[in-house]
Length: 526
Image (cartoon, rainbow, N blue to C red):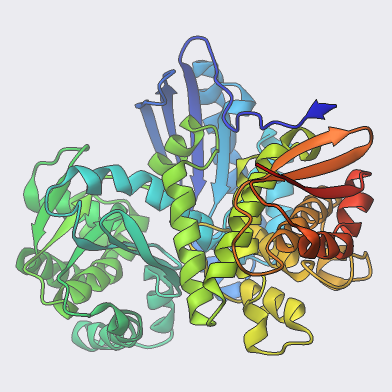
């Protein structure tokens, strides 16, 4: 008899500190940060580079990137590659991400392929959920270190060229995350064909911003004071010129009145004047006014005398993520689970049963580590799917598993990308009835790697559901072992598991097909 035990999710690495780099291909520039990551996961920035490049205007107007822009991007990245070689950074220690502009371009694959041919770098378009996750990684240490923000409610906001990203945080917990199409370049695009005075131009932008913030912030005003924490290059530009000082490791406090005056001054100037007067690049000058107007109106919307400005960015979050080996910390995992529970309550799920199934699924996952060979991210995907596997009941009992997939895919869960959300939905979809089939549209479209993941996790979920078939929560502990070619699940401290054995007989077929082992459930009396 052999016993199945869990293996560590985070391998311990030994050796000297490593040098890593992250490259962010944004709407208005391509930026790179190079840092040293020591054995304790601490990050020390060594170099920062930035090159203005207006990809956003093309992407938002034409839905594609021109050949000229693609070649310019390749040239910039070839220059960055030479810097990486000077630092001796290996390709495995470089992460290249692209945000809204590239993600929304219809020829984004052609863009990524051209960059790979020119540089050997893999461009990863990241969605809003991944941006919010990385923002969380970068900004939370600053919030937790500040006495007024550690336990208060904070709205973390970054105005980009295409989108504005938002995190609502209270006491270290993410209450809401959202991305919406209100970026500085999008605002400028709405005014492109119209000749307006500076006053009328500002009024029209304010109208667009006001509509967006009203929809977004109405459900945040529950009487609890809200602090606004602004991040992003435009607001840091304002801090640089208004405060004349700053600490890269702290939160600057910027009065709303001074921000409003500076914004009004910027909005009266054209791009050439901003470049001459403030030493900005042309791409900075173009987006500065609209972005600052969003921050100003947000501060006024919440009647704030000041906002906090955090000197962190997407690249800081990416470097911190690399320092963790791409793994999810326990606290980040808890944030995802809290978001899933909130979603379940929205659909009036059986919370007690859902939590019991999720805990049993987690224990099965850990004890079957040597069989499934999946990592800690997959454990979170399984746990969330277990919590939400029955939310489709609110729509229809007979096909609730299919409705669960639909509801999960079209909901916002903090910290999960679109691909991960689809995996959660599919695992929930296969908690009952038909096994995964290539003819099933969403499942069949997955790459083999992800089909296997979904099948493994769905098989484990079915076992967990059988263990709580009575919905009594009476089975809390399990012990898994392999006896011959059979998986045996022992239940300590329970005298009779006959009902669960019947359910296990009905639910264990997928596990047998995926892992090649039948399942035996038995009680282990005290």
